[in-house]
Amino acid sequence: MKKITLFLLLFLCLFLTSCGEKTVTPETRSFAEAHDGFATKLTKQLNDKNEIPASPKGVFNLDDYQTKAGKLAAYVSCDPGDGQKHPLIIWVIGGWGYGISDYFWSYPDWADDQTASGFREAGILMMYPSFRGANGNPGYYETLFGEIDDIAAAYEYAAKLPYVDPNRVYLGGHSTGGTRVLLASEYTDKFRAVFSFGPVDEIKNHNKSQFTFDLNNPEEAKLRSPIYWLSDIKSPTFVIEGADGNLDCLRNMEKATQNKNIHFFKVNGTDHYGTLAPITRLLAAKILKDTGAKVNITLSQQELQEAMKQPPITPMPIMTPFSDQELGVSFLLPAIWQEGRDENGTYFSSSYDGENFWDRSIMSVDVYSSDSDNTYGSIVSEMNKAGFKGGQDVIGGQPGYKAELLEDKKFYRTAIAQKGGKTFLFTFEVKPDYQKPADIMFQKIIGSIAFE
Image 1 (cartoon, rainbow, N blue to C red):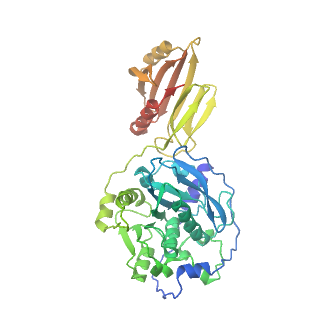
Image 2 (cartoon, rainbow, N blue to C red; image 1 turned 45 degrees about the vertical axis):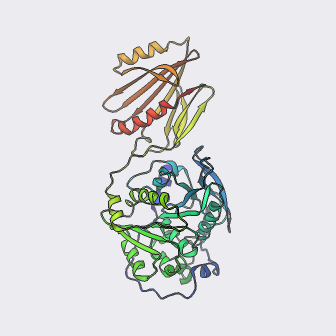
Image 3 (cartoon, one colour; image 1 turned 135 degrees about the vertical axis):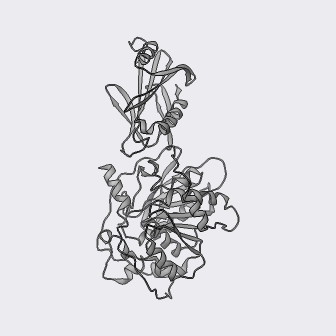
């Protein structure tokens, strides 16, 4: 159910009707004036109490940011601790998911990287906000209205963090998130640059079953539709969509404005989701170079198409420290893994079943006392008889032994060491299809082992 719920949150966003042609009548009001002067009428009062998982130590903090609706939860990158001020991007995922979960440190799928992991991997700080009505937050889901206030409030929070450069706070999002951040760019000019992937031009092109506002009031829809307010954009804003995605929506907005601050790009050879992993890495490189008094980020069609040619990257998971005083050992683990215990000992695995190396891997840790039949020597002997190939090595500063075995359906890697009269046996297993990236992860875990 956990997997199914996450899937629905992320991908119930854009089963779209045709965007079609649109003629837009110029507005005399600014979007901020119109938005702030309007009281939305909700026909459904929907919210959730979904639990917020603890954030990975040393990677994200779980904090609250103040909004008009009250305090809302967010995951925010930890202070790098170097005394410097760093760029940060606020990222809004797709789907009608209003909340936050451990999805943000789960496997970043190259074909649909909703986590925008390219920014984090480049060293750029990130903020993943939840919105009103979600995760026990005050308020209700407002379907692209109140969330715009929340995004503006997220900027105020991020800009005041002592380790964030307030002049280099960026905003990005995909699909429904792309529509949200485009509306936010129309609402405020405080973001240094805005990256909107796959937004719609009008709210009517989203899945109406998710709407919570009065459909009979045209003003409700207008204030949730970016196409009417494009002239208000002052921050450099980049709208990006795959050729096989919601291209009509992009074209409608491109035809509706002469605003030089907004730039539209059709990316050939990909769909609504495939732009994310390659292009967020391109944008991350540009953010790192964007250090002047004024923003100097530009994009070209050629750059985008070149970015799409890069081969898929297999990222390593976010690793966090694990320590067990009872076992007397510590090591790094993928943040998404959870500890379990059975009659055979302690094991670690993912609660997800994605087709990737860390969701398909299992690690077990067994500790044997000196009076056990399972001594260091007997374990090595049994492994050799079973066909494991290996040799002596140093593990956690102690003499040890490493070995591996490849079978038809499993790849095994083991590490054995002795410390304080105990024998420690670490066993990793994964399907052979994921052997290469999994082994890199396993070796990193083995290299982090420390005995207490």
